[in-house]
Length: 549
Image (cartoon, rainbow, N blue to C red; front, side, top):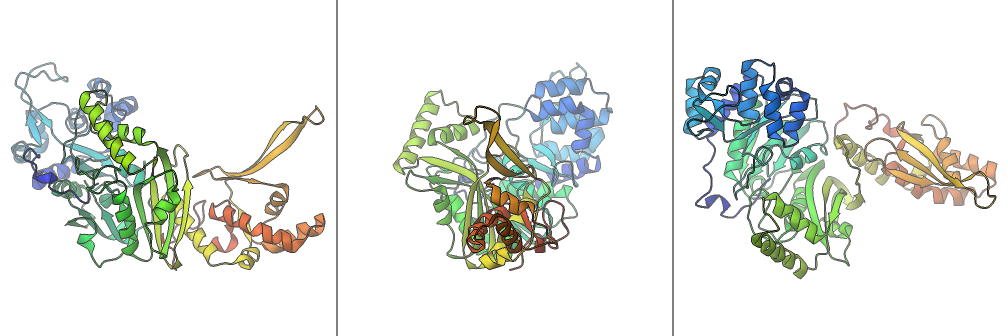
């Protein structure tokens, strides 16, 4: 969400700050009425719910009008999920005179033109319509208690052009980041640029600090907090890391305004006021400085590079020389033209119009002047360590990673294990093959003999998570097949193979070490002494999410 936004909230036509008391009262009432995903699905049916979530409100209303759910549930879904006009008298009966009066007075419930025909009854009535979006969200799909997140309406149910002070709600960005964050509770959690509070209200922590420069966003977040009464969040207004100066956290999360652009602030939720990828650089540097020993940060970001600079070196340049282990995952990389079109479309600009053409050209000119040839987007995972900084940059383009947070935890655990061992330590350890690893051999017709097939490549592939795949040769395949966490060490297994095949054991073992390191880093091989600390494939999940260094 937003961390810095010079003067945007002061615009003359800026929307009024949300009434926290009225919105909080509505959230409290809806929580008590059981408003959430189960009620919505039960009322709309799975087909109706799917149509709503795909941005087809007409179809969703069609299913709602034919629903056999109770009048109460249909009213709740109509008024607060689909944000359709609803009978004011019925809402008063549901929520009470006082609350409806406050909601109408604060503009949360706006009057619909007199004489409007309601879809439910086909008759005219005094109708009102919700001007805010209220969406349920849970820590993981179909798991955990839901919270209700209040925000400005998006474009999913109607043509909405987001204004400069627009506050997004449960969108794709926070949900994507949520799936990258470990599921284990944090001690002190910082949600930098919390927006409407999606992450702050969902992620488990003993203490949560949430910051944002945008007062409208914090007002929405405070109202949303009424659906999570068991949580206490320290909401702080301020720019970037200013509200937490001098403090450290064992987990930091952030979906900052990282759009790569000229440095203007057209929209608080996405534009930082810093040119190009400076916002991502600032958040990465600041997160590294505010991590406690062993703590981790999980950030969304973007990086802009020219033809002579790699994305890996670009992000590595944002980190200190010591004290950080970084896993940078690039999910996508696009050309400047595609990037500009995406973000202009995000603000409902038709790039075919004169305004759209002019803005496209101006934005592309800024990127061209900076010699930006490509823009990458993805996640930056950091861990505070002792010793030299380590950076691993990978492209993972698997369409659906699902919940990835525990994979991140285990990646840091495996990386820490590797950092503590030299080549002899690698060879003298025992391993087991991850249960989800498949070995496949690709064969093609044998052109030499003209008959049968010949093997051309053998791969080990994880069938879970990121689907890491490594090509291996026959000797490595044979050694891996002989590994057992309760059996011989890797060195002993390799030397036994060399004795049978008449190979030089010392030379073979030296060549084996970097191959095993890569397989351990990607979780295809699990060191035997990591079995007791846990791994995402079914080991002890009660272990803490951070690695003790």
